[in-house]
Length: 504
Image: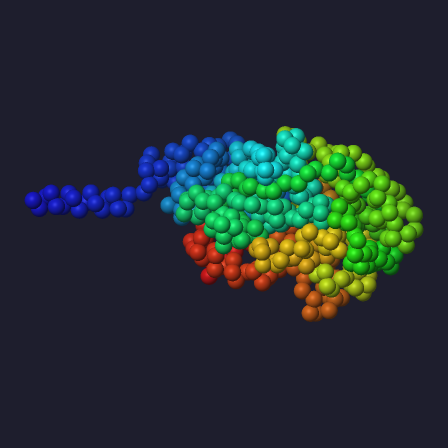
């Protein structure tokens, strides 16, 4: 009788504390447990390890403990459970284009869940689409267009993955017309930090749905998103006007355009664009491009731009490319195909960003200091560089029509997003130490010459791990609520990277 009771107790304890049958049933250690899932896990001793852990930004080098390649949401769930059992930090990797290599964890010994097998793009009869999270922007654009002449707002680089892009914003030239990528999301299929497979939408896990649209990678691994799509415009025009200018004239160009987009009540949403600033032919000069897109009636572009262009001298060069919608995306991407079957091109770079408020336009003082810095310090810098001054706002921008608290994206009254990009001259390591100070100086030249009360944010998709206050700059007034939700959905901080949300 005693022996029977003892056996029953031992059996009960073993049952209570045994892991899920999918965990560690072959050998019990981390590697054998992951191998048992048949998810193509790659470890350090695999000959393919070096290739699959090469970052997009070659300034970084991280060594994940393993990279797993799931083929289904259940695979993702099982991988997460194994990772949690063995106390691993876990991050997903989509396109791998994170500027700071968050797709490799931003640290060593992280378990990477590579989503590259999740490649379906399905357009439905109601013109919503289900897009799996391993897709890149170019393939999505082609898939939606070929299946039904539909489109989505998104960035220009075909190789950027949809996962991070849609989690943290998703800006492109069509965003003034259609909003950010994350604004199109109707629901998200995902895997939580405890391995639960779930859906987030306005009616299911609505608090999580809010957080995923602005800070998604901190909360769950997205397996697919359902989005509303838009009719692809019948035509598109990509235009590039180039001038060689000194800082004073460049200030006039940008200040005049700023006035044009802020005061023109009939500014059409189909107009999108940016200023591109580059090293000029000599010290004290800049190459200034007005680079934009137009998806309205083709014969109305000139009339739309005329109130601005009439104030300027004739450009040094003018390139205008016309075609259908896909032609315009290829032209916007630098006249490359949207298909991403060819190998991606790496770079060695550092980026900062600044998001300026609509109600506090850049002053001539700030612009002149900024452009003077670029024209003079930029001429002697040890790095190559460019700056994109992207138009988010202006009259009738769909980005800014969304109420601030509708999503976790914290920048709904933005006029410009300024991307400051510096790269090694060879595009290969090392990145010169002086390059960091040079880019810091770009940003400081604006902030130090602006009123102290102006709130400047930063764009989470132009991510910077040197920011001392990323919580405030990326997530603004939403950060505390995001922390509360992080504590609810991932209290262990399983999904962690250098700029992730920290639980309370």
